Amino acid sequence: MLFYLSQWILEQTADGPWAERLSALRLFRYITVRSAGAATTALLLSWWLGPRVILWLKQLRFGQEYRDRADEAGQFDTRVLEKKGTPTMGGILIIAVLNLSALLWTQWNPLVLLTLLSTAVLCGLGFYDDYAKITRQASGGASSWMKLTVQTALALFIGFYLWSLPGSRSLVTEITLPFLKDPVATSAGLIGLGVILFTIVGSSNAVNLTDGLDGLAIGCTVIVSFVFLVLTYVAGHFRMAEYLQIPYVAGAGELSVFCAAMIGAGLGFLWYNCHPARVFMGDTGSLALGGALGIIAVLIHQPFVLVIAGGVFVLEALSVLMQTTWFKYTRIRYGTGRRIFLMAPLHHHFEKLGWYESQVVMRFYILGILFGVVALTTLKIR
Image 1 (cartoon, rainbow, N blue to C red):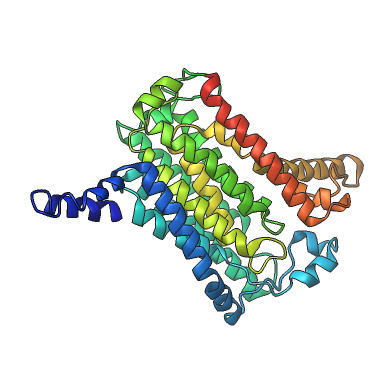
Image 2 (cartoon, helix red, strand yellow):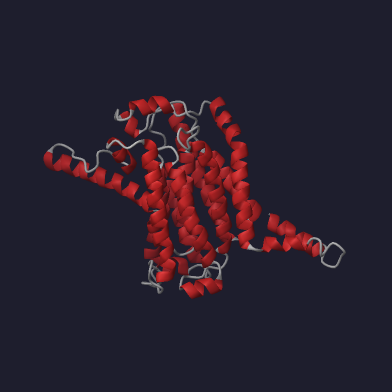
């Protein structure tokens, strides 16, 4: 919006006495300037709106009175008492600030609008899930099948949309891998759809599983967003993409403005979500943020780089999958279910080992940064 306004002003004053004085508005043509503006706007809005949203959620009694799966098992009774009543559904703040900042600072194109729309859909799904938990005072919420159906439908919509357009068809039909400059497969439409489905649905649920400790999910999301801020900028810059041997995607540079807005909104929310948290993002935020990361990875043709950059999310999701599968297998085989980890997701395993909550979070941040560095090295090693 600000981009179009600035260019309109420049056009109207091009031959007048104000042309020289308003020449600074040309800065809005630069993605780097607008990215900085989006991050700053999102951060300031989060700081300003944060206390008001928290108060509003308290007044609506949208607090976490229900017990999550770990608490239902009686594992963290002390922690439950400390966090009981803390407002949840704070993801409303993140997504509202993110979308507003992105709309203000991006040069709108199909990639940006598709990401914004998809994020709003997943936010709505998470809102329904959180609301169902609160109103029923139970941890059930929306059924797993319902969430999976909506996520799958959204991922397939994005996949078929990209496949239907000649300019973006290669995002589906070509399969690329990190560290390799050439596609490993072409004309692989069905495989590409499967990759898109796995990326978006997996990322959305992986971030959701990671959201179990104060500041953990949002901090790791900010770290991954920094990685994709770089990747989206490079993918949308023809000369850089050609030099680094990565797929060039026209218009992808505007997604770096979206990533910057996500960083600003994430840091602003972390201000209130760090230990001891004053608000939780809930599924309202985690499903949407995870889905946004997956969608961006798909749109710049780097879904497998997300697996590296989001290594913390991958470990969290794998720990749940391994624990559940092994428990069911051993219960059938031996009559008693056995565990690989003391508890899943993985962050609870380390809590059971005696780590303080803040220790787990900070050490996962360190891991997240290391994964992010490895993901960025894929650019040069190609």
